[in-house]
Image: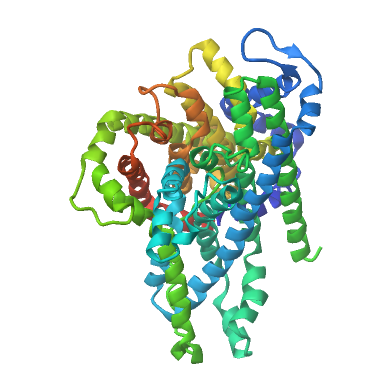
Length: 322
Length: 295
């Protein structure tokens, strides 16, 4: 997989250049800065400056009109006492379960089964067709998927009709309208959206694994579960890191599905930080407060990404025996 | 969704001729049945959508969501098509995603040339910065972008969205291409330099042709990711003339026009381009991934 390989490839790239005669070398390399210029200017305009702008706004009160009023850390203090803020981050933990934990675990199992059992004992075409079914939701605009699911889960939607049809009519429910079931329903939709990604990445990863490892293990009498734990899991650990990292970032940032399914409701039962920030910016017109929410979310994402990359580097070093 | 690298359908490795007792066992059929059941569950929402996209409102209210349509009703599709001016929305999405894909790849290529081949000082930090930029929540950028776009007259223009996504996507592209170029054979570069080729010539005559498969994959990813983006187009594009397909569908949610069959018809129309791209690009993707893996 491209990403994991590149993650792995970056650190060594730092070392190999032999120390060149410094004057000529530096003179030659300096010309390359020109190539970085357009990207750097765009980067500063579209990402650097707005990020600093949001940081500044998070220290002010502002409705978007007139001049922002400096309030120091007041927005952050207010956040700590805001129940909606805490609810949104509690819901993020559930989003991590639905978008990272379940898809990664299920994805590992499915990929291993598709590759190892169905790809080998049946036709590879069968495995490819099944994989496509799991992957399909990943190619759709997630908002469109959210709108279809929103209709399916409505009180008069397809899911309740299905319950009626199989004689479980007693379970009919307003799945997204009841604070008790809205979050589990959204989580189920997110699992449906997300599952194809790990399946495809892990199946690609498994093609990298030397088949002789499995054959040797089979000869030694290892059953499927033994082989899964002793060979599959360790061999595709780099991909597991990448999947876990990208899914974690996606879960922390999730916005579109919440917007399409529930708009954070009912009663904040499915609110998440990014929707909370959007709502605070553009519906409540509290720009300073919205900026503070965004900065907290940014900080969490940066820390989480840092921890992931550090853990990956450490596990790679261990593998190389350092 | 942000950084989902979606390598799609590299062909599954052919079955190896290993024969053991499992081969004849029942267990493999049980496994196949379970996985197939799972795959069918994945497809159920699509079936619901198809079933109800071709149903008249009267048919829907009398028969419910699960009944078979009594007639092949296409008025819902046509209503959605004309009411939201779907061809225009399609064009808007295509212009935005297409421009971002091309510009994003160009910017990534230039950045990565300086970082991966030029090996400018501090490149690891710069690459790290780009990677981080790609992970930022868009909420941390959106208000200043929205405010400045209003000030300079870019609000509600496709250009604003194109510029923003060119930068966001190229942040990832730079990260990916910089590490691919870090492993570019130095001998090729040195040979070109001996022939007197300047840096610009080396980039276009040596580096670009060699990286073409990777660039193609990047182009496709940028296109699909931008096509599916939601928050920034939702904030930046506010009227019928400029909106993209997902924003158009979402802003009609709850509208009087959108009864259940029309909602499904609208969703169906909105999904078709994404599925078509996926099918068309599948082969390129598979090839690109393999090319990338060989390094």
